[in-house]
Length: 257
Image 1 (tube, rainbow, N blue to C red):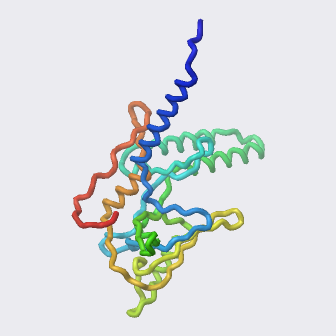
Image 2 (cartoon, rainbow, N blue to C red; image 1 turned 135 degrees about the vertical axis):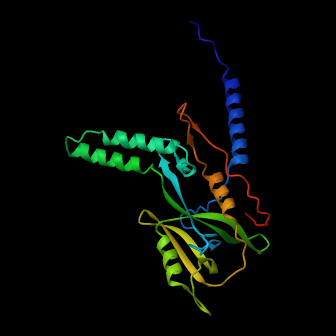
Image 3 (cartoon, helix red, strand yellow; image 1 turned 90 degrees about the vertical axis):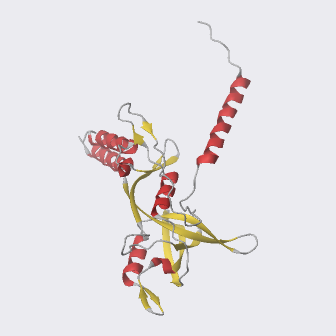
C-alpha cells in the first residue's frame, strides 16, 4: 500500500496552531489562588480566618485533596477529591488500582520485599489526604512605593501547623491580655532548602489588629475548586469528567477576593 506523503510544513503549522489554542485556553482558565514560594523566598502575610470560631464561621477549612508529583509527565496532580462532593473520584480509582497492583507483587526474597514496600509506599502517596486551607492577604510594595495586599489561599504545611496551634491555644500577647486569634498579627512565611530538604517556617511578628474584609466561605471554596478542580469518575464509561465549580455566592458585600 502506498503511503501518502504528508507536508512537513503544513504539519508544523498545524501543530503551532494547536499549541497556540492550548495556551490561549490556559490563559483564560488558569488560576493562581494558592500561595507558592520558591527556595529562598519569603513574604509577609495576614490571615483572614482564625483556626476556630464559636459559630464556625471564618475558620480554617479542612478538605481532602490529591497532591503528588508524576515523574513520567513532569507535573503535579493537585485536585480536590471528588468524594468531598459525594462523587466517585478519578484519582482515587488510580490510587486504589496502584495499591492493589503493588500489594500483588511477589515477596520471595529481601529484594522483592523491598521493591514491594517501595511500590506500596509510592501508591499510597496518590491517595487523598487532609489539607488545611486559610485565606490571607500577602503584602507587597508597588512601583510607587505603596503597600499592596493581594488575596491568596495558603495550603498550610503540616510542618508549620504546630506554630499556629500553639499561638491559638496559648494566645498572643496584647495590651488587654492573651488573644486567641491568629488574624491579629502578621506572619513572615518563608521557604528554604536545608541539607537537600525543603523547609517552611511561619513566624508571627506581634499583635497588630487590622480591620480587614473576611471573604465568605462559599467564595473560598470556589477559589479552591478553581485552582484544584475535582475530577469525577464517569461510572458508565470509566472516563473522567470535571463538574462545574461552585456557584457564585449571593453575598453582595464587597471584598477583594
